[in-house]
Amino acid sequence: MRASVITVLEPVEPGELGFCQAHEHLCIEAGYIAELNPALLIDEPSSTAVDLEIYRIAGGRALVDAQPPGCGHNARVMAELSRKTEIHVIASTEFHLMRFYPREHWIHEKTVSELTALFCGELPK
Image (cartoon, rainbow, N blue to C red; front, side, top):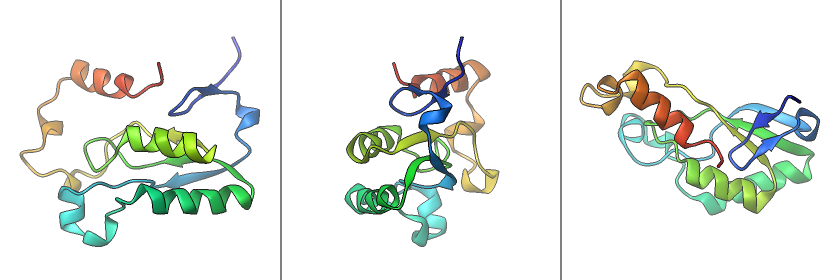
């Protein structure tokens, strides 16, 4: 079996990734993190698409979106941006610093099985 990288759209052979940024944020939706710091809000996919086009013209071919689920992350938007701009987007699968999750956040209640389903549910079908 050949190695591949799982992107938000499909598995990609490592050689197809080209120049890759390792820590980016394509979308941070309104919520607790944006309440903590409104400057972190990234909720205009059309503006992000323009930035990705500039990145592609400059030679970029892939990036890792480091925004975690449950903290403003939106896998659907990442897939739309990847499809539109032809940039390979690799979504991280993790949670961030606990200060970004209020006490009542669902992250504190989920079981290992539920978290596994959450992460696997974002993989391309």
